[in-house]
Image (cartoon, rainbow, N blue to C red; front, side, top):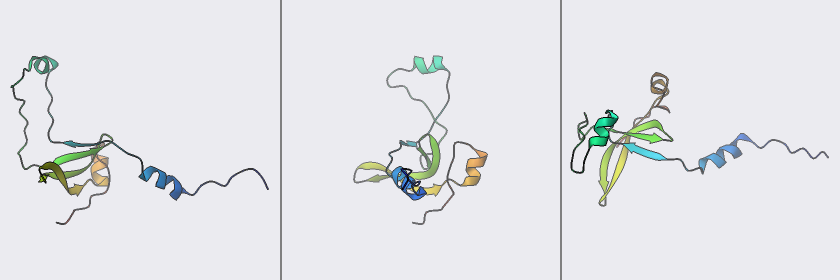
Length: 106
């Protein structure tokens, strides 16, 4: 019998990845501004965003938008209810997106 081990099945590798922790970020809004303006900000000043309070937020995993959601309050803490999973089409149009779209029913 040779000392060569047969390759592990792909599912074993996938199982290892499923336990891997990834950074998750909820992006409420973003803007661009010159560094000069950013450095001139003082405590109490406001930065305005072109966003309505009920607009969906982006959910990013490892820096990529994978879903959109609605901000909710759960037992006094903020949370996000997933309302849309990004589609492969979205990913091809905008490289920051990933995953097939699946509408979530309430």
